[in-house]
Length: 151
Ligand code: ZN
Image (cartoon, rainbow, N blue to C red; front, side, top):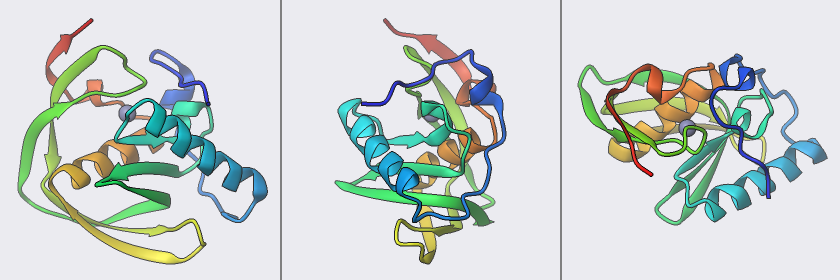
């Protein structure tokens, strides 16, 4: 299992690099390990900077499916935003409310190297926005209100 980097750490604050070859053996191995780590930690998502790699890759656990997303780009976002509670494996024990677009659309490259379009709303849209923030060096605590510490 991969070690998860926690705040504060400069790696979490760097802008990630676009992945040009998703078929690279090392990258594919990393994807498997990230999925394993996310599931073991019961996380809804994990971005590569959280395991020490500043590359545009995130895995998301959505309704018993794992989405592998390379190089996501937001192409559309709803005017409507909503607040909801978030936490993060890299900010253990902290929770707070974050305002996110209710609906959004992204372009990305999947594990097979295929270009995909995904439209998401509600929780999935929220998770995707949280993970894309990681790729830009942004943590949810930068945007959160009513931050609370549990445990
Ligand atoms: Zn996070």
